[in-house]
Image (tube, rainbow, N blue to C red):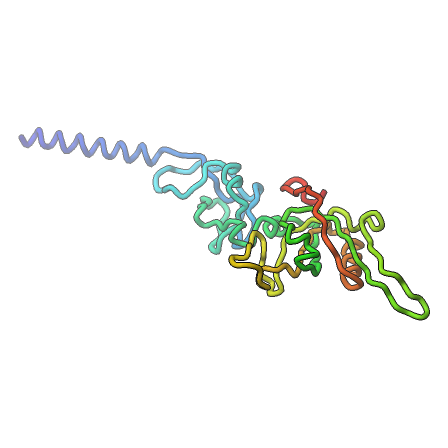
Length: 239
């Protein structure tokens, strides 16, 4: 009996040790940080790499494919950050929707863009038919100027008269308190909290003349936005 018991204990111990060693030796290719990732940074493919890591102790919080991970984003690095070579833990990432939406993420990772805010209203924002990613043409109403020396009649300036007013990209819409109205709808009729007051536009870094024109028109008259029907995606935001 002693011998049999010894053989059984030895066999069980041997099997458990073998399974432990096999599991410890097994590896997966998983996503890791290629460089140090600082908190708040937008996550891009250049920051990531696939690295062979032991399965033992890996847990469930990891990503096996860079493309599949980014397809679920866009992502920001969370408050803790990652060191170079660290396993990228999806639970420590923050989605773009939690940080202000897609266009805030897009702006934070692009180098050659500028923002310009334009005063608006429910009427001038096409009856609230403006959303992030919408391309619009601007129409400017300039009131008449009463002057004995040089009176000027009222006029309307559009893209035909000034090409700088054509194909402007909307990235956000806010109320007078600065709160985002993207996707907002009144629960019980309209109130001032859900009425648009400012529309933010994304332009190229070199389009200073366009920014100056919008500022001048905003001061001299009222800017009305007419959506063109075109929607911007990742690949054509600046076209």
